[in-house]
Image (cartoon, each protein chain N blue to C red):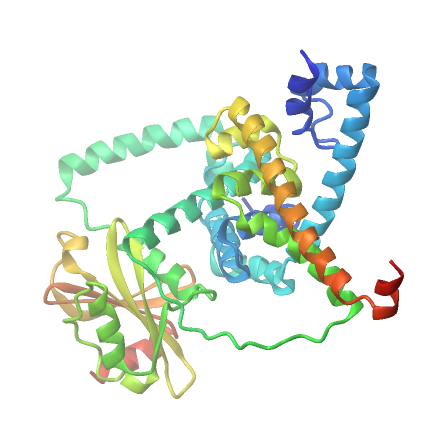
Length: 249
Length: 182
């Protein structure tokens, strides 16, 4: 190994200790120990890197509220237990699932659409604080226009009890390679609601049902109904509030 | 994963994860959202991790994939920020001058191409092994070494260029008496 090769490797060496036992650096470190010129170069390199690292950490401060927001997530999303994934249990669970799958395939009609996944994904979008909406407006006409300009179909019916002036903006979200429109509302009562509209084709075999179905997803109450070629999901509030809101339409 | 495990993961990794996200997204809002999304997925899917020691690598890989997903989405469906930024000039103080020096370093990082920026962020902010970085970015260790070397060189050139700008400013405000003596 010549000094040029050693420098290339030593440039990647971090003095914090994380690379101390990495065999990748052993030969180059030994060479630096024996060659004073290389040793000087290495010392200067480390000093400069330490300074840049300090500056970068100061230049990118971590927001104070981030940690508490992250810890609050566990109150919203129920953690999945690790114990299920110990190898023996995993194998047993896989065998049971395989049997159940075969039985279901033989005995049951076609599997229902993955509504649960859709609900959970939309509930997650609804809970996102940063970048919650992409376009901000209280004017539903402008919101529809913004969506149309981006090639999104806007022939959907909003519940009459969601007044236009309560709209805060909209966003287009992805689920399972499908686009869904999200319109954000804050009602006079202070309730925050997000209405998601997606083409019914995105959830095949979904029967027409104008009666809302209330299900909690990711700690958020949702109401889903199907009308025409669209599936609607309203997220926010509690079941009683949603029932009251949708009964009035 | 139970709540205590999750809390430990947040305590151990959130700062590094946020800084990595910042180096990718280039702004605080997106960096926070990326970090929150990665931890939300840890809660939702963390049970699938058989080995708890893999949580850190899983979080960084997940965040990087979320970011790549955003990039693909934005390419096919551009987003528009509506928020307006007011142009306010800050008061110049010694603290601000120090901050400007740090910000110049931060700015140099953000000005770099993404493939260099990501590596520098992992190099300066995190203590992944190079085998882990290779897995995270899906590039061979040899490529990481040569790319990192190039990235550091580019960053130093950028900083040198910025320091020349600073020196010129300092020279221009020397008192006339001093200038006549030299």
